[in-house]
Image 1 (cartoon, rainbow, N blue to C red):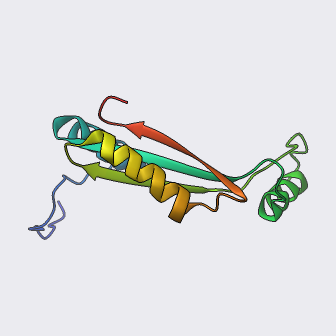
Image 2: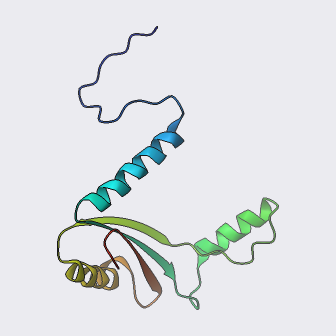
Image 3: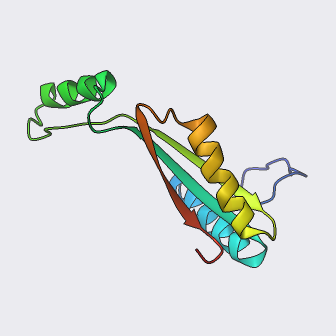
Amino acid sequence: MVDRPISKRRSLPQYHYGSCFRLLLLDQIRKHHLHSVNMMRATVIITPKAGILDPQGIAIQNAISQLGMSCVKNARMGKYIQLEFEGENETATRSKLEEICRDLLSNPVIEEYQIIWEGKTP
């Protein structure tokens, strides 16, 4: 039996099933936390508009094609941002995030964004 030092700050037990099991466990705890208090989670996906040239997407498509998967005909590179909110005023939070996405997180001339809500009722 191996003696291990006891960590005072450890919030979750250590499992030997690998990091995938720990990630699943943490995701379940977060989902339970979202529903137990006034929490909302928003995922913002920002991508280049359809008519805009995407050099990163072209590079990804070419690399995938060189790896033997020539069936990929289009690739778009974007941004994925996950935010968590706490509060009572759901309508104000949603409208404020729309404003932040439009003015700060994306460039409305060349990018479009999509917000996926989780938590409170949409």
